[in-house]
Amino acid sequence: MKALITGSEGFIGRNLSRELKDNGYDVVCCDIVPGADSQALDIMDKQAVKDIISTSSPDVIINLAGLVGIGLSWKDPQRTVELNTIGTINILEAIRESGIKTKLVVVGSAGFTITAKMLRRICLLSLKTLIRYQNICRRCSAKYT
Image 1 (cartoon, helix red, strand yellow):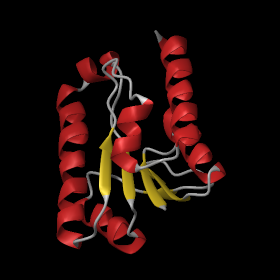
Image 2 (cartoon, rainbow, N blue to C red):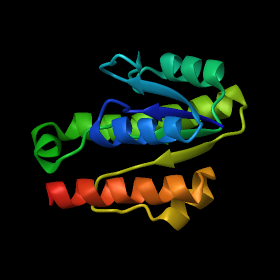
Image 3 (cartoon, rainbow, N blue to C red):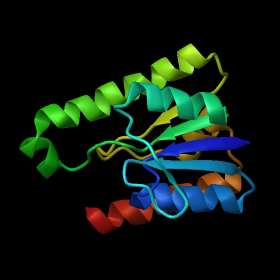
Image 4 (cartoon, helix red, strand yellow):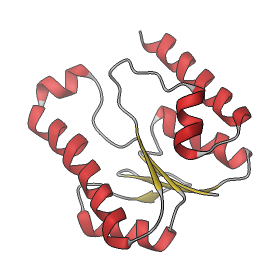
């Protein structure tokens, strides 16, 4: 199974990509600021989003890209709404236009926890991977709350 992760250089993105790779997934990592194992992708660039989705043909797309944190949203509310909303629309449009069959997981930061059951239904990950992902989310949540 192939997964495309946007926002792969963030805390959850790095951990999720490692977890998926450790469990046999082919993972395409993308971030606006690429790292050693990821490629550059600005989800506001509609054509770039379409290109990466068309060329990688992922079975699941996990969108972790966006501005998070209340402080940033108050400093630049327009950019926050644009990136978190229009960026997601660009991904949805790229999926529609490319005609590929994929699933999209959109993750937010409003104190929402993805349970293993929910994530399993969405992207058909193994139960072992889901439990690890849920534990990563719990550790992250405990650290920052």
